[in-house]
Length: 245
Image (cartoon, rainbow, N blue to C red):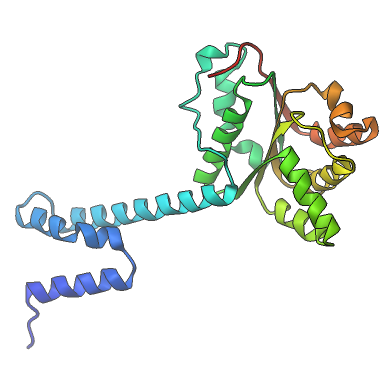
């Protein structure tokens, strides 16, 4: 009968951890074995700790990769938002949105208010919550989005670009109204909105009221068509007050 020495078993475990690509568990192995020898933990506890640490590492990697794919300009959180500075906001309502039910319902969230009042912070924070929950997210300023769509139209790939933008469970369009939309841009944006209608959730931030969207998009007709889609199954939050810092 062949007996395997403890050191050989440990070598086998190391080899298995390398093969399974479990670097965190491999890193913790020696310290964990010492704790077992000292009677601090038993084998089941040791296995639980190794797997938990490895899973945590993989989840953090997934989140970092997903945040890069989401193209968030910065990473901000709801815990970092000063609700006391914006008393016009219903904190409970915002925290309820962080439950992400609006994504399952393919709703549109509008965050409206003057520049600097925290609209982009809230939109980014909700996008981060969605990424952490495993949702596919894409974040883009309206001017950049229209430029992408216009480029795709010139290259004959507009349908493919819209299809790509429709894959995201949550599309965040920031800074509506900050820069003028180029001619034809409103129609391109409408095509995207129409393609996502009742199929994918959106968060829109704007420093302009809906009555001014005709000026933003250069056409009252386009603005009306957009709002017809964007205000259906919508949640509108008006942020008032001073510049948020």
